[in-house]
Image (cartoon, rainbow, N blue to C red; front, side, top):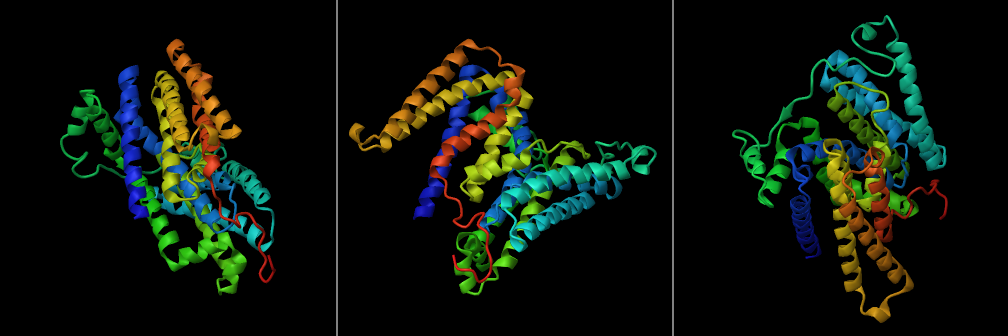
Length: 420
């Protein structure tokens, strides 16, 4: 009954979000807010963030903090570019997965076997990834080498020998482009819904479909199998799991290696998008993926919502910098909704605490400021537009931090036989 109620609430939330975005598009006239191009870009940008977040989810559910996701993604991008230009996209996929998994293995050896602080090990991985890839580029892509003649440089690999296949989902985007025709009408809600569906289903990269399937697969494995139960028990109370015969060391190793593989897969996707490795192309997506995982409360569904939110903000600022101003109105409305929800949950004014009054007052002031900015500012400075996804990351984490519950033994140093 509880699951059914949560499922219905999720559907209502999605419907309300689409209705709100459609209303904002109608009021502001910023058609890019719900265009198929924006949602196609958002999907492409959300996938590497989601894959990195899945990597963090696997590791932290087993009790290992993995802030080295960025470095593992970097390893995945370089090896995907190196293998892809020689043997094609499938070789790039395998090489990127293996490179990320090796990064995870290094992290597991340091944290699980040698008991190194998880944060220190993760920072080391983040430094190691770019350093190793730059060294390999200077050795293998140096001037006069075969790769250099094929278009490589110190900061880039040659282009992939062939691109990853794309497909359109049946009924929705195969055959006549009826969704595109409906989108072009700009009818309230119907046109917006058509643009959203077309962006999410038309000419979709195969790796996108694979990444999306990883979410329900992760949920099934971690919450509906005995292996998943043992893995989560290692993150909640490894000493209790040990007393029941669980090999906690092995579980942690498997989880962290899978974590690195997911991060490497996110790097592969970035290479598929740009058709080659480019130094710095991860652009902090490993850290944003970690933030999406925390926003999602260490669960796949919440992680997907966080990755979609960050991907949408990033895609919108790439497609239309002017449309970002509509976020000011959207933010004002969301703050008012938050204010109403918080006031409704209170039993009465006498039940409100100082913290409640402070939060509600801040929401009122914030909504007023955002609404005033929307009325007076025609175009935001480019510098502010560029950092919008990162500012959104911080704001979302600030709001979400009030309801988070991490695994109890996440980041705790474990030694077999010790009493906790």
